Length: 250
Image 1 (spheres, rainbow, N blue to C red):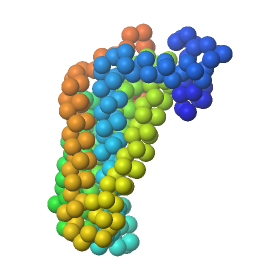
Image 2: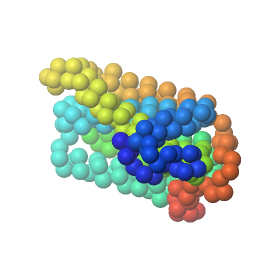
Image 3: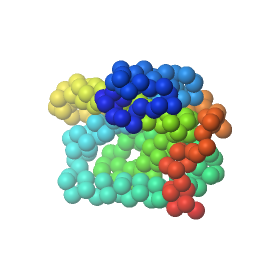
Image 4: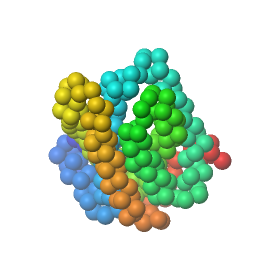
């Protein structure tokens, strides 16, 4: 829908015909994704991380209430702790991290947290322990999106931004929707519709989420440490995405 209906996905510089915007944009977007192995790997990183993150979110809520006895009040406190950690990471962590180890290194750190998070959740036996894990890992988990947004924006020319951003957003949303359905069905299956009293029945789902994050991390490790910049581009949109965060963390 984003590719075919939104006008910003069209660009005269790419030779788009005003008569055929709805049929040309999807093909142009996919051609941009597959023309370069780095762009394709970033897209796959985003897909796998979306599958992992959505899987954890789908499983975590019923797991906390059904097996760890999380109450509404404790749930609010857990959410605030996670959001506070994430906000702190966005405000003060992105800049120093990117300046210190680069965009790709920062991406790998965030994905390492995504690998550890579901594994540590499986080891938690009470809501308080989950709160500690969420507080410690909230920052790198929240930093993932602005970092990957800066990376993918820097890989294409300015006039191609609409196509690539729209394509990656659609792919990520499809992966999120599919993961929500799949992990919801799997959770009901492994817990026998929530009647299995043994919380270890949920552990395989956490392991699958961690495995998806590990696959995403391996792809991120294959990216060059210094990302190639597109030719013919005078400004960096990715820099615009990260610049406020870089200044905030200075």
